[in-house]
Image (cartoon, rainbow, N blue to C red):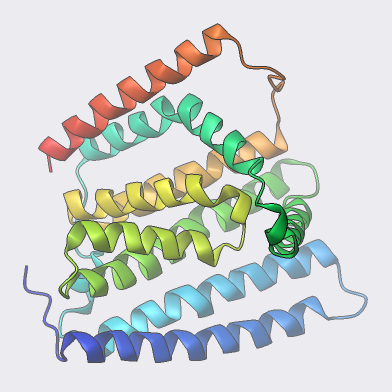
Length: 277
């Protein structure tokens, strides 16, 4: 596919990194101003800061980089190609089928313990995880339909769009344009995507999610498929947080069977989607 690149591989990545650094600094300044407003409602300011961060730290560098390094910025980002409904239905089916297996991975990752000599690192990681959890709790705080809709728009729609535009539409695309190849690019981008969230005890599930979004973009050629599936995943999280169901305290034989079935069905659906790319 002709993406109209203007510069060589090294220059494209360099310009992207410089633009991203500048935007991250700007996003940090704006978020700091909003969060440090005295007397303001903390939840409201956090929502505004999150919107500003998504737009400045993710959308802006993706758009600026694509315009700078490509004569076909919309094609590079994958936003000029529509997705097929059949692809969307299969992708959503994969997300639903994988829930039992992903829950096991999430539970395992949440209880990972580092060696004793890494205790300071683990403490730092736990503190970062706790701060992230507190931010999420504040972001989603409040009751009523209005708060739920706002949470879905920010955490679901905006995060899904901005992160996919940055990580898959720009970073994955740029890495794949070099010598590493598409599969390495997808998994490397997924690792960076997970690191960016600074939630280390959810690192591995998020890597798998990032790789899934990357393959959706690769198979379909349309970023919109990854955006919608990402937003769908985040919306499930928001709704399950706002309206929790009873938790399972122990895993029995039936739960293991459900997990194995989840893996098998998910693998079959992914294989079918890969063949229909």
